[in-house]
Structures are given as C-alpha cells and as structure tokens.
Length: 71
Image (cartoon, rainbow, N blue to C red; front, side, top):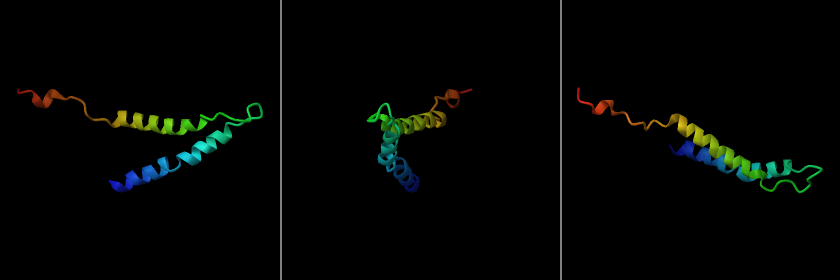
C-alpha cells in the first residue's frame, strides 16, 4: 500500500508548484500582463474534485439490513 501512496503524492503533490506556476504564466495576456495570481489554484482544486468523485463512485459503505433480518 505504500508504493501507490508515495507515487500519488509524488506525482500530484510534487507537481503542484510546477503546474501552478505554469498555469499562472499561461494566464498572462497582452491585456492583462500581470496574469491571474490565483490561476494556479485550479490544479489542486481539480485534483481534489476528481478524488472526491472517485471516492463517491467507489464508496461501498451503504447500510444493507438484509443480513440482519431473521426470516
């Protein structure tokens, strides 16, 4: 279980500074040469949103009372 954890943290966590800076640099235009300084936040927000959706899809903690019924 340690290997996927460390690979995930290395890829998604380790790439945050690079990708956030890249997104900030791409937000600079001729009309807005300073760019949007919050543009880099979209990467961690999107990773968190994808993890949330995957968690909802694979969550298998539903209450199933069929095994408790005594027929």
